[in-house]
Length: 81
Image (cartoon, rainbow, N blue to C red):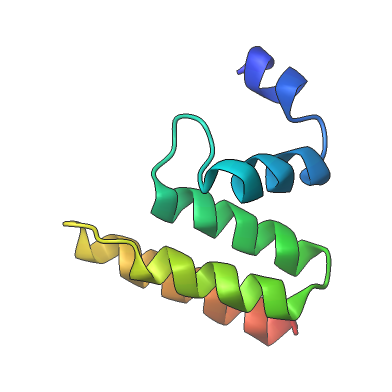
């Protein structure tokens, strides 16, 4: 965990990696987009969060629970609004 945290010391660093590569190390594109969505939400960037949630949900997965997980997080973020 420490090398990851040393590499990504800030939200900016995480988003830069995501924007540059379309994913984060050790995560699928869908999970990476979910992380980006939560960061954008925490920063108050609703449009970017919405786009990242959309990308996360569009990622092909064989796990139907993943889509429900994304939708639940997105719902909670929208409630906080």
